[in-house]
Image 1 (cartoon, helix red, strand yellow):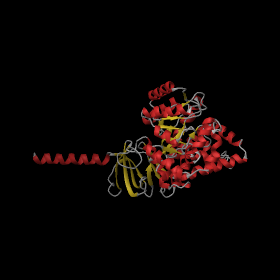
Image 2 (tube, helix red, strand yellow):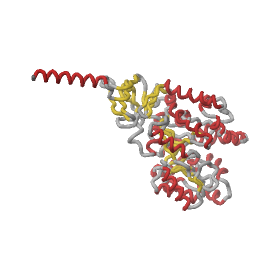
Image 3 (tube, one colour):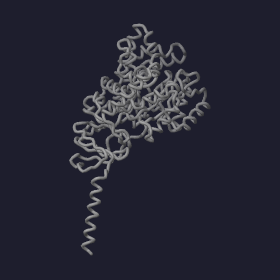
Image 4 (cartoon, helix red, strand yellow):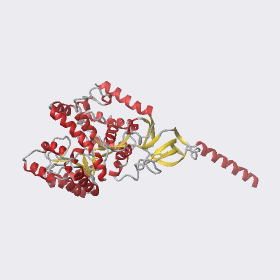
Length: 477
């Protein structure tokens, strides 16, 4: 009887062992990949990464991970893996007739390795909020979306979809509305909002616990808004004034109506003082204020006379309605005289040259593109790679450029515990590349595969997304 029990036990153990050998333990295993630490630039070679659901479950040397079992295995010898890219300034908009064309941008980001975006307001907030939830629930393929909802502006704003306010009571009502929508941050701009109410808006949104981003009224200093709770300055051009020895004088003249803010750009460029600017930027850093330069759009509009972008291959991935919204910037640029065109290029070069000044101050630079409707030829997904390349051309190292997206994106939202590195417990939004992007930033465009929320997309899959979009838009044009 005893021998029989032993025999039965041996048989059961063998059955358990057989089951363990045939049942996958993980959903995905990546073997023999090189893990780039974006914080340090160090590379852990020949590693295996195990993914369960949407998170990284284990990391070990490939030699010690040979017995790992998975539903799907990727052999990635010689490849490099980094977290998915973040584009921290995009727009979905153009009205109800362009809802479908905007939704089609979601796979365009994925096809380019962009796994998270920050929507900085327009006129499709209900749809964007619905997409945000659908993506989070796995019902829609697209990047994580963080959105401001409709931004805060003054009466008769030039931008579509804004919440227009004229006093503090209406400001409170606008913030109540954003609370109800469940937005991720607040954006405030100044096309029609008075400087006083702009400042109060920053203070009120900050007091409610929001991250606050915005354009900057000329008569307000960056330091003042930073102290009031401004989290990000959107667009590099607003950083220029802080480097002018004439800042106080110019502010007084603009405030009195003696000159217009648009007429002071030339002296700001000519008299920019890097040392003065560094001191101001350091104050912003101390307050936790960062900058989203969006230089790729400035580059495009500055050089439209040399490249009109009518033959861009990326155009085939956009719908005709979105492309038509590009016309207003193009038409405006075409009306400029040679002197204005020359200054536009000078301005762009100056803004790019400010990157090392900001970096020296310790202030965070966050990658964003302004991609979406209205902003001519800034192609969603594709543009982020160009923005990072501009950062390197401007003086950042490739590793520093990567950090502006992969680290500073999630840092803005306090999410570095979930994103920003390839570590156990972090989200499995992973970009596999054929070469090391810390050595050459253009390597981000040479994709081997993408893991998005634990699902595998090979280069063939990513290319198929692009082909599908091209065919869809070909049929509608």
